[in-house]
Length: 255
Image 1 (tube, rainbow, N blue to C red):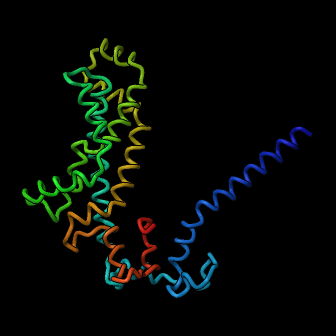
Image 2 (cartoon, one colour):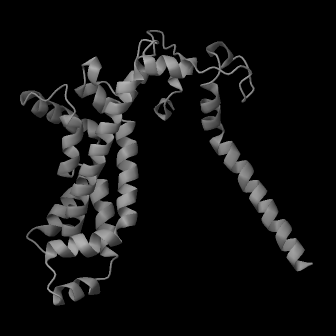
């Protein structure tokens, strides 16, 4: 009898969680299925399932028949996002390891200064950065969007790595030092493999934020041949704010 009650309780819990999950993902499902509807049916019917399937929106977006070719834009977004992820991992892992394990002059001051920069909005440093990149002739290139990631300009990633490395027992450092392990080899062979959860987290956030970045890409890219997906999606908006909803559903950035 007790086992039967436990089974009913667990089943009811799973059903409730499934219903809540469906409510949470319903907007994503609506966006996905609406991309296969004719544009006249997207808001005229309440049915989630398309009554008439069409691939016109995808074909127009990839071939450029709609006026915007998403093929090169996807490549540009992937290129920028992947490089930014590599830069974020490079700078945050090295800097986080240094703050967490090494002893050097003004360590506390520099760490506090780094934390203080977390309170600065990105718009505050945008103008100085734009002036610098403009003077060196890097506007209308991907460099302003990728280079800062190699310089540790995202203090959140550094802080995340510092806190994770601090949770790794220092006994491993002492054992490695006894075996003659250098500081860099300690970082490469011991700290990095153990920091995989932090590395994965940084990679996800860096890719997501870079892929959805519209403001920065709009500022630095003026050449249509270099446009990315967020900029391409904005091109479907007319002066009255009307949008081609079917084609806008090509990318999650349209949320």
